[in-house]
Length: 138
Image (cartoon, rainbow, N blue to C red):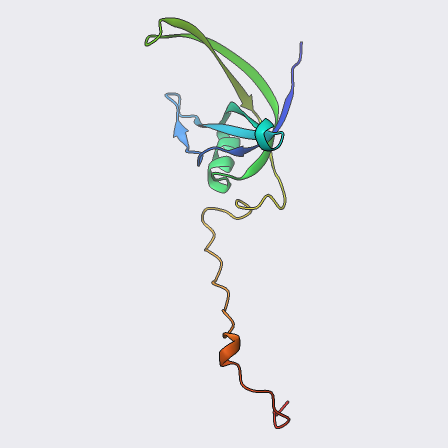
């Protein structure tokens, strides 16, 4: 049976690249998606992992708050015991093979390595503006 998840969300934190014991690079990241408005607003958080070139691309070009779409995801589940509460818990992680950057997603359209945009020039306050005159050279 084939399962495929396509999900759009914002990075909860800056992704970090790691290397596994077999030398493969990977990154684990969490995406958040808001639904509803006002008092009925809820946020869903999903955990993802990416390997190889996909992981390297994510870590190079993505940062906290950036909106992306992930797809071609495979679901992995694991069980663990919460020793503090002595309860068994299930962990669900999505392994993604493909991402797409969302144009116009606000903060995150530029690479982490890109220089910061130049400060916008400020205009002079109205009080300091020269009085209107017919003798202006233009």
